[in-house]
Image (cartoon, rainbow, N blue to C red; front, top):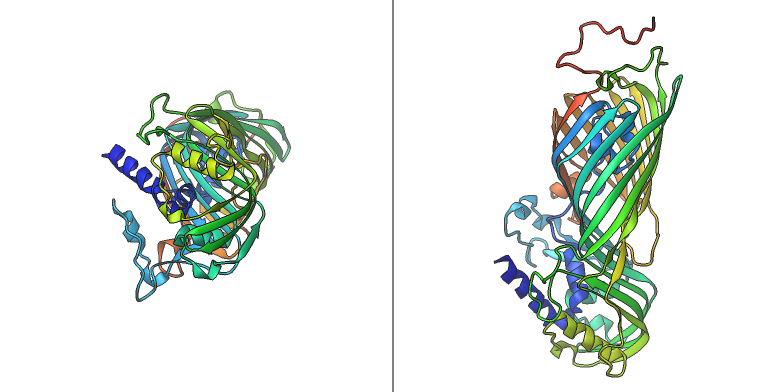
Length: 504
């Protein structure tokens, strides 16, 4: 059944050129609500976060309050954009929980799914992540861990709004007829992969009240599918509803997918994973403790206790790496070419190869293979720099600031939006509550809530996405089921008196 549905979807896609086929597929993918959270701020900032903390800074596992942490299953949902939205009168979060979620139709009392017209470039980000069985284990001043993730990310950056409107409406937009459009760089990318990673953290200085730690994550990447459309310039005009004149196109399009490019059969023969790669995370932390340690390090790893701190500062670089697709992949380049596409609405494509060959013939004087440059392509991960500050202003009460900044490492790369987060949390081993205030792309504030009871937690960085307070532009939701053991607890119960802070 799945095969039939996918085959049908691809054939419908390739047969409808009036919505620019592949680009529409990419854009619509951003609004698939089986997706994931961006930062999971409640999990990653907690001193009981364990292996989750390594996802924002791999050095944080050295300063954790847990001796052993085992994640059974964690999932996330994140989606945000500044173009498409659902009017608040028509939005119900429960509508998307069914097996066949339905978007609202146009009509009263709102007007269903709509889009913004303000001439601003379109930016969107969607992420799916499932963390499977993963663990972290403290070895005194060292910490080791292993984690598994299934990740899928799609990003749209600086897409001209007129192109976004054409992708959504088709070519029947009379307000754009005869208007010459000149645009600079923009990109649309999506990538799905599985990763197997290892975490190592080491406290290399522990002197008086000062503690310095370093951490690293090394990850093996296995790419399932990917696509990158990277435009350097696009000049065009929509002559009439079925005629498009492209004065200049300078762009690269690379893709790999588990379908047969000649027949559209799913899945394609060959390996399940069409691409492979490596990536790394690096992080440092500085901790200012409340008290000096007056005792030698204990003999047993489980006897190491968490040293309470006044504040903790962390700096990390995340997702440094890329995936290279060498199987069932193509790279096509359109190097400052032009073409007049008449009767676009009558074009049809029987397969992916039909589509690429047809467009190559249009732009290269009938040569159907001129745009093809390689049977492989690379796509970079969403590299980012993060700074974290955690301050304990009262026992068990913490203030946290986390800033995330995207870092461009390659021309073909997923782009993660910038984010600033301020959060207040109450934290014990049994109960934890966190209230984050986040600024997505340093824009309007969003209030969230995270709650943990023993080993189960649920959170969101965007409460308004769960309710119809405002027009719906995105969603954020995550939960986790895990098990952990506190530091300093070698038995089921701690001793009634603890003299281990005294030195004799």
